[in-house]
Amino acid sequence: MRLFIAIDLSPEIKNRLSSAVKVLKPVASDIKWVAPENYHLTLKFLGETDESRVETIKQVLEKVARKHRRFHLSVRGTGSFPPGQVRMRVIWAGFQAGPELYDLQSELEEALSQEGFSREERPFTPHLTIGRAREPRKQERLKAELDRMGAEEFGTMEVSEINLFQSILRPEGPEYRIISRHKLA
Image (cartoon, rainbow, N blue to C red):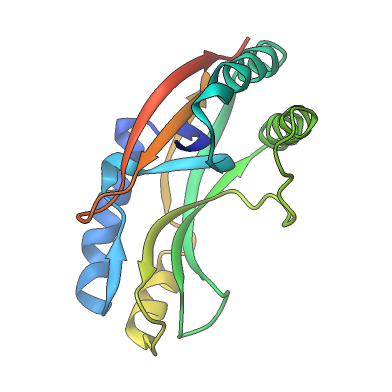
């Protein structure tokens, strides 16, 4: 099973992001856009995981979730990786959150590493992938539009749970299914 842990976004935020993507599509070429129902904030990508480990993951998530209070998260701005380039690989929307988000992610990383899951080597950079370039090419108009939306507010939500998702890869695009929900304190 291909698994990841994430925060699902509110319908209002998904709708606002979807509207922004409608503005970006006409100025972009050769970008595979993420379906709005798949918008989420990944806390930890687990990758291919044996089904026998799912219960252990759920136990870790339950334990970590109970130790963290609900908090607010804002989706704000757009950009790309690599940053500032006209040849971009990933188009993203950004997140603003206090230390609660970073503490939650860090504790998940630590607890899962104690269960034998690999640690992420890169620092946690909260972002939402909204599109990926099939092959990076010059996209001056897209970069200009992303810069224009750089401070745009897409909404704020209360984070009340973390979810274990399964990613099912299909030719038309991935399907994400929530396997379990874990309420924050």
